[in-house]
Length: 356
Image (cartoon, rainbow, N blue to C red; front, side, top):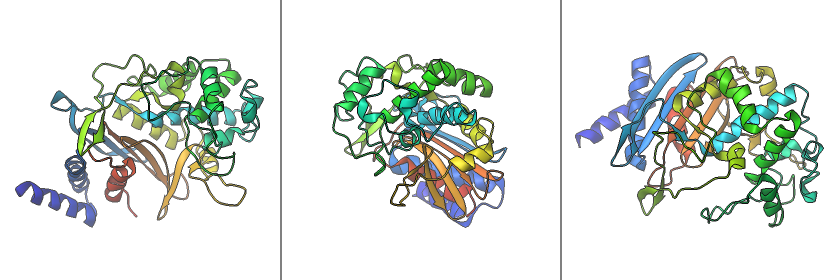
């Protein structure tokens, strides 16, 4: 009963709005505890930054249920599809350099694409409006993956499309395999080398790994919900070519550094980002859910740009008229017992930390 009273007190503080930094820390600590208890989250790590100031950092749990080490800012977490933001950043950098035309068909840069894909534009791949199916079966992740990037394209091209191109948003990792090939063909460098040269080394991301087959030591165990319990995820042996769409491992400190560098214009100029960060518009005038590969939303006076790693990970940048005033939220977890969506977790932090 006493624990419940303390929790309610913390949440009441959050609702009233923190007046001082200590109030903000207390309110967010209470919210993280509420999320952990309410959703059965084994481990979580959260950072909130306002412009150049880190205004909150909090961690709960250990690297494994029933044991492991306490979570720190340097604990490795799989970031799943948040990995796509590294790919997006590289594509936008090359667009700024005049080396990629986002409105051009990807086949301009990758001539050996399957025939049916050759008219699909780069921006359509980025924004998941290509209509292409995934190159893997999410219901049978134990099955062998195609042995090469080209074999993965071939496998996807033989499956029924989810829709015609440019009709609706249908999320697919196959899109990012195509973008990986675009990057490599334009630069004549391997994808990993590009990430190292253009993002990891310039930002000093010392604990970010692009080797899915060799995860770093101390990484969290990952869990999924089943019958109200958090159970271990089965191991997935991702192929090396899948790194561009969802296999990077990072830490709270590194991932927040990367997302903040994006918001600060250190990787792509801010004025260019604001131009790119408009939702994709279909021929009928409807908007898609992505803006140059970033999930797009609006909350009051804020534009919301981000990406999720399913139920486990989410990052978000919020800005008003421009990026001179912005917030960054990074929320890492290793699963839960009730399939709570990562958006719900980030929204709970945003409601406390970001003024309406």
